Amino acid sequence: MDKFLWVGLGGALGAILRYSISLLPMKSSFPILTFITNLIGAFIIGMVVGLFEKHYLSSQLNLFLKTGVCGGFTTFSTFSLEALSLFENGKFILAILYIFMSVGGCIIGVYIGKIVVGMRAF
Image (cartoon, rainbow, N blue to C red; front, side):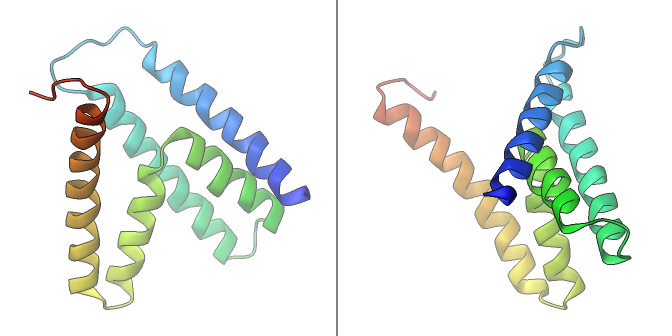
């Protein structure tokens, strides 16, 4: 139960931070705030993983920051970490496959989801 609490608290904080960024007065035809959020999330999860690997973080703090805060802030950070790990482990084809299947599959999933509820996607 302790682990769920750490993840939940971190997730709440991550979601609040994500929403806060969405309120910034930056409007563009390019989704700049989402892009910035994903870059920040990827940077933060990289730091968390690096600190955890050096034994500077407890497992509870790791859950709070990596799974909770980063997960609530953006799941793109986790996706980026997993893709990088595949590259680092020499699994280049699997990494590229994972990237294309994830991005393409999620776009298709959003499209199908919109169709299912009766919204036109195009």
